Amino acid sequence: AQSVTQLGSHVSVSEGALVLLRCNYSSSVPPYLFWYVQYPNQGLQLLLKYTSAATLVKGINGFEAEFKKSETSFHLTKPSAHMSDAAEYFCAVRSATSGTYKYIFGTGTRLKVLA
Amino acid sequence: GAVVSQHPSWVICKSGTSVKIECRSLDFQATTMFWYRQFPKQSLMLMATSNEGSKATYEQGVEKDKFLINHASLTLSTLTVTSAHPEDSSFYICSAGGGQGAGDGYTFGSGTRLTVV
Image 1 (cartoon, rainbow over the protein chains, first blue to last red):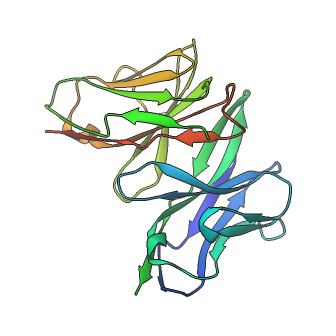
Image 2: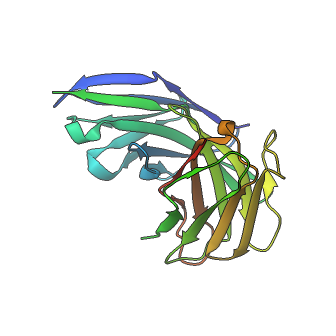
């Protein structure tokens, strides 16, 4: 079975500081991994995805993530936090069963950006 | 890009009544739609997967008779919460993809906040 674990349910950073949100995965097959952002009372917006091509994936809003097989990690980073980055972030892995894909989400990390 | 419209965005209903939530893919065909439930400050829990023209596949622990899912066309899936009770209050999110024009991923709707009083 595939799964993702997000370390840290809450992360606070100062505006302009590095953002690092951690995600570790478990998968018996090469995984497809995703990071989503959710603003209050809204759906999920795709930030970036890893689909077995380049291990360093660049996404929207200045975010990027690096796939590290040896560490089974897919951490999300952004060099300089902005107030508008405050939101909930979810890591997800795509699981295939009987030809249908499912997304399995982590428990989420709430990012707070301090002025 | 692929757009999914979900409505209503919020609804308040009385206990015992039924509520229907719609999920539409606006510019692509969605052979597969997922319905999720999200409790406050928690992650998304997959409730069911629906494929166009066939019965939905429900996750373990989800009551089929309570959460009726219909996916009658390639652009529309509905979730009906029957005989709603306060414990059904939650944020429901749909996700669609898999068909022509959908790209290689799934697009999420903006969610529906259901409050049962």
